[in-house]
Length: 138
Image 1 (cartoon, one colour):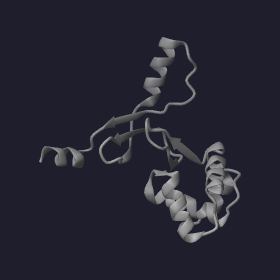
Image 2 (tube, helix red, strand yellow):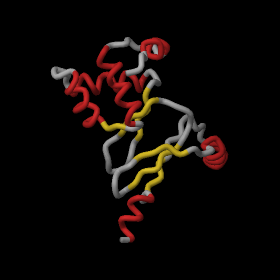
Image 3 (cartoon, rainbow, N blue to C red):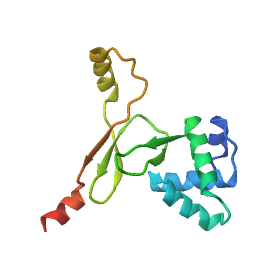
Image 4 (cartoon, helix red, strand yellow):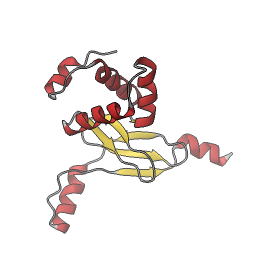
């Protein structure tokens, strides 16, 4: 497990053992939903409550350390905050992955057309990943 103490401090967050483990699990998975994170945490911290997990997640989102990835008709997933990107979501297997896009160009054009001051861009593309396409063609 990496030592995230200094990173957490830079986000004004306490480096509790539970948070350290949460961050490690989120980093390993890339994107994780609350149920899978909770199940993983219970293996190490048997008395941790789901409310505590939510409280920690929300605190890390509020401080900008984590990002919530909303997927229509599915549970949100969480990732470590990183450079601007979009997501690809497979509607067959549920795989979620990052994809680089020029969201500044998109935001600027939408802002010009709508008059909105765009402050955040959250884009998720849905489709069928290559492995699931291969399964479908068999």
